[in-house]
Image (cartoon, rainbow, N blue to C red; front, side, top):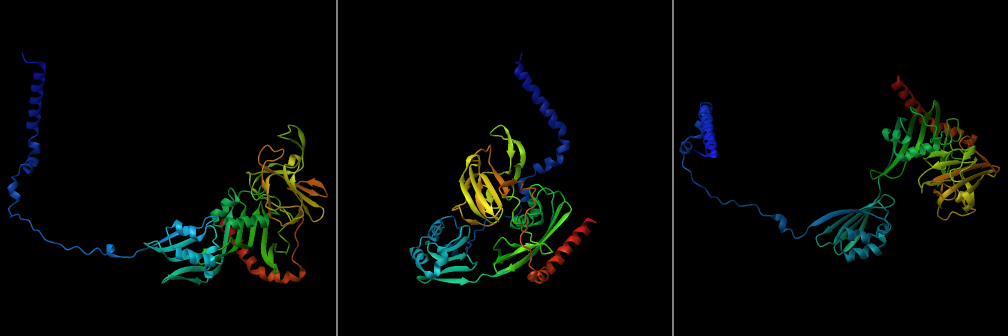
Length: 432
């Protein structure tokens, strides 16, 4: 009797032959191609051809000199020598020239963030150095034989005027970003309309703005933050307009169409953007003392180190530490007005008693010194020594256009008023 494994193997072999024979008619065509005699397709004689092909000469490796361009940004504390070493330039003669030559003075006054473009050879010697100086001029150092010379090309400057409109959906900055308005221009809108609009609390969805501003460009690049020429802001149905007017030899200011100053004597807030964490109140539960007491100021929640601005022109009457206020600054304004800034982390450098400060000038930084449960600014507004609510009190206006300048103001702003009117009508037409 055959073993079980042998019977199983024989059974499998029979099954394979059966499958093969039953499928042969279906595979006939394929089989015909598969078994074609190899000599049927090789009737022609086969032979090999060997031919010498000359390759073009590799001229790249024949070059005896090569140059490269590299660039690097100026970092804080950099010298031109350190920059050259970072881009692998090792040229004592160039270092000596850049350190001593009066014509290379621009390279000893490098501004952080600017770019230097360097050309050097394969021996790490300097061939050329390009830089845009503080005036926007293109300054270049060129190797001339065994020495160096400096050339300067005067900057090409131009003034461009932009017109933009936008609508508030969530925040002012989101709207200005959507409209393509730079943040610096958005900041100026806050400063211009800040006496009439509390941008912490008064913004509403569907508020609208139109702004005409100018930007200066040097060699095709923006040179400074720009300036608003005219702006209009519709806040909760109220329309505010402002126009820039050069009312003195030293500068200009913003005025309403009637010539009223847009710049209040006091800013509504000493911090540009924050939130009110605790308002003015006759009775508030103190989070540190755990008891009810009056809160005769406004608290602005902000990270430690946030800039604190003077809300008006004034004189420093106190700078130091005082009880629950912690680090504190007190300013005197126009005789009977006084502002207080408490819980500060530090003061502006060289701030001292008796020093004059301007509206918007940084005087200190947010902290949590004194009786503070977290980082914030405590701000008080006093009239004749009594605290008043700075968010509700009517703030005094700045000086209006004088009668002598009223005609000049009307003439200089006529075109801007027409543009704002056109923007307003265009916006209304879109809504219709």
